[in-house]
Amino acid sequence: MPLQRLIRKYSNRRLYDTAASRHVTLADLRQLVIAGEKFRVIDDKSARDLTRSVLLQIICEQEQFGAPVLGSELLEMIIRFHGRPMQALLSRSLEQAMANLVRQQESMQSEMASALQAPFAPDAGEGK
Figure 1: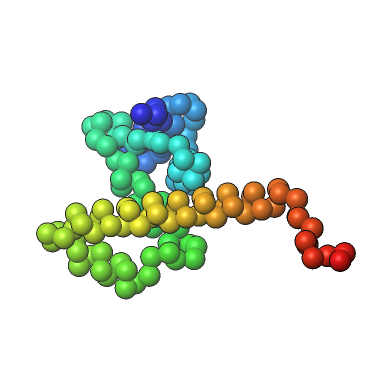
Figure 2: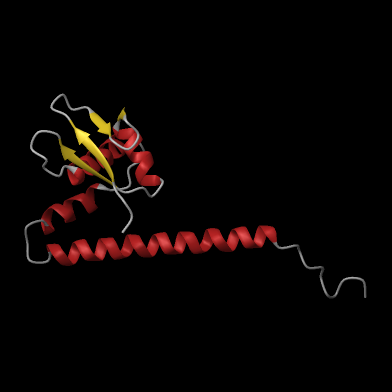
């Protein structure tokens, strides 16, 4: 299992990256997620794991200021499932769907890269 960065959240709401020895913002943590780096956010006083809460903050910030990914209907459905017996199924289904989407995106990027690198073959019927 790859090592996780430890991010400490202080009572003044500041986040401190112990690996980089510097204060970070939600935007910095978003970049770590995009880069595929794992981190864990803990409360400095209680040592409570705040990672999920901070990830939700990042999503909320993106949804508020960028082009929304989560439409109102999807959010309503998630709220309806929360706390019900099918919640675990919804969670697994969403994770699997996102994993499949990532795999498809990586496959398409790989195919595009190899298509752009391969020399164009001359038309076999040309010149006859």
